[in-house]
Length: 247
Image 1 (cartoon, rainbow, N blue to C red):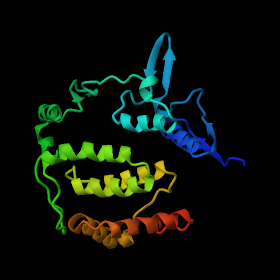
Image 2 (cartoon, rainbow, N blue to C red):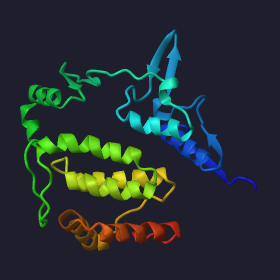
Image 3 (cartoon, rainbow, N blue to C red):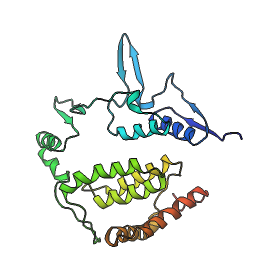
Image 4 (tube, rainbow, N blue to C red):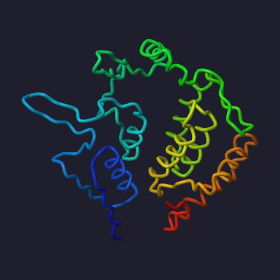
């Protein structure tokens, strides 16, 4: 039986990851790239014996790369050695000031306080509450423990649709940020959907009330079924070429 054909345009991290996943699902994959080598935003320029990074120089979510190696029946550690960086990187500004970005919570707090103490007000370090909701998010101490557990849960779940539901729901349940949790939750949902070949799915503004009620039911009454049914309907309609959300 002839394999289905898939064409991936662009060989950046996203394009290569999509090509690998499609190949593992039995597709005959062809990747098109306009540059002379793969990389996308991670492309490197070489001149006069020097190498210049065009984009990212650090990996902040190595588990996502490890998953690709696992899909191919291999171990990333056999091919790549990752070294911890502290700080992750330094941002330099034209006035001579700088900001060191770290993966350590307390180090980040000290750096924010050094750079601009007023910015600590937007860094989640106290209890938050959600308007018009009976759900009380985790306290700031619990957030530090809950987020790594969420990442482990997503890494260990093999079904993309399940990752999409859990990624969105649990992220907004934890509510790690002062603001923007819903947007980030929907982004994680779509990232998980895309990893399984599902279409990018938009929550219609007209169904915001139903969407919020289903999240409330899951968060407060521990009944996630309405949320699952709500997302399933949107994804199914998109897969049939009839997306519910319109622009």
